[in-house]
Image (cartoon, rainbow, N blue to C red; front, side, top):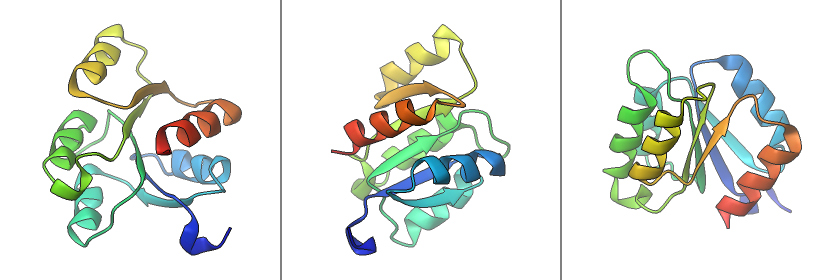
Length: 124
């Protein structure tokens, strides 16, 4: 598959180690990283449109919840699946993710096969 045909995945997470690990796991995708909500929103404002977003909840500057809401305000990104990718195992967070329409809720670090399968399923 040529690079131009690769599906685009964006990771929004303040931990660089998560970006590194996720890029290795999702090597079949074109993975773009943003270390904060505002950094991701800057990329979207420049016209970047991913096929899928992995979004951390706990970040400085802007939480994942705030980032999710801002992404959904961008017309071109309204239908892009956004999965919450977090260390939180709080049922209230999982419930809230469902309520706002997150594509999925994954606790990190995810197992390689589970993450690959989930992204492949949700990116279709």
